Image 1: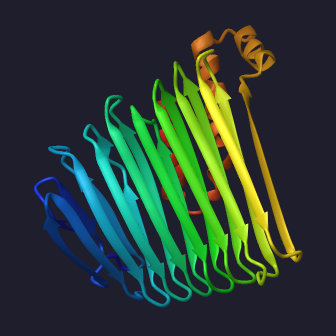
Image 2 (image 1 turned 180 degrees about the vertical axis):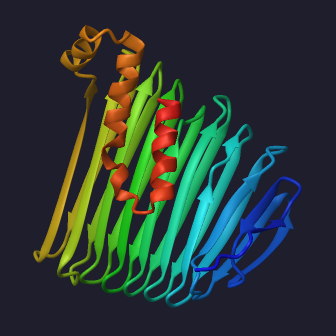
Length: 304
């Protein structure tokens, strides 16, 4: 299938969008140094792709409304290494049988503050694939709210945090508001130094939501004595016809595994790196796109 040559749309002197599609409508305005974006994706034989480009010249504050019309597919990729403060506030609306894929592979400066807030509303048969990889910063805040409003909507998401002497708060709320919807969430964190990482994952199932399927798992790996991880799964189930599971666990590396690696002539630091790679890579196969799966694995390998 023929693909279009990407084109770049400069929105500010600090932020641009690269896209491969003519089936996207993108409008913007700047108010008090805040970028207001509206993105509408229509059905296309070639799935639409957007890549976010930042020049890191000044702090970013972006508000974006994202609309996917019926049967549209939109992929959003953010691979920026940010040396500035960032704030993204997104609202997305997924039409029937549309697919939104969001991939974030972000390295932040240790002295910056970064926030990402997303409210997603999903229609019949729509799919949202949400994957986030980050190294944390002085303060990092991730908040995502998923509303599975209609039948057969599906959310799949994974978060990976590798934090060094920073505070990182992650809050996910998944609301099953119609029958036959599916959600599958996984979160993993590795903390070093005095890092403090938290994950709060809430799954709500309304009383009329029969045939609901939901899975949530969160795991943490503490490397140093001062490191902290707080994992809080919450289930609020108001219907008996559901299959819902959750799990949370955190702890230190298995000393027997590290000893085994060391006995094979591997240094302590290299053994630790191999252990972390294995720990974080457990859910990488949830990314179905081979290119994005490779990017996720590379991010883990380069930053662990």
